[in-house]
Image 1: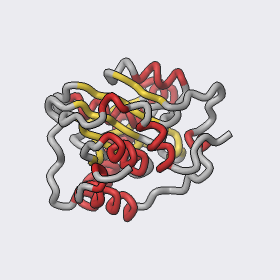
Image 2: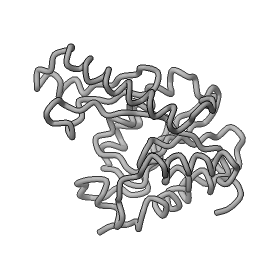
Image 3: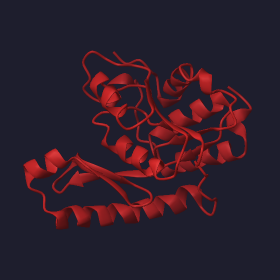
Image 4: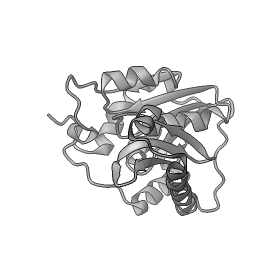
Length: 220
């Protein structure tokens, strides 16, 4: 049974489990585009914290793009599912080709979402990394790895839904993992939502613009 009407409601529920971070000047909320941004917007709004995005792209298996052999994030960070790569005998040259293509998409989205606005400093910050859910966690692991290189004080992974095993594994990467829902039988992130439409680039830009104008801190 679905728990949330949409990503906005999921974000409000998730924010209720993160109230200890409310009103703190050292807290920064980063959403993973595109689906994580509406959730992150509600979290940032509730906590009166700034919002931005961390761009991460799945590295799909050629011919089976829905299957993730890893992921990469801004800054050239790459996380591979080595067990899957070895099992499918995917050569390094193929991985490099896929990664190069996704790197170009990362650059395109950086410009599209942020424009000339500089990337926020995360040094010594408590960063809440938000997505609309976790399945295997490969994308989130890439995001955490990218952040670690920028010396934050604390990384908190926060999602509305995920399998318990993935949340447990995430604690090996992040300092904290907050999952609002841990279903006994997890099939897909979408099972937690009534409405789970794809989020558009325009929606992401609009939410980031609203956040930049201070709307995340002015109403809930």
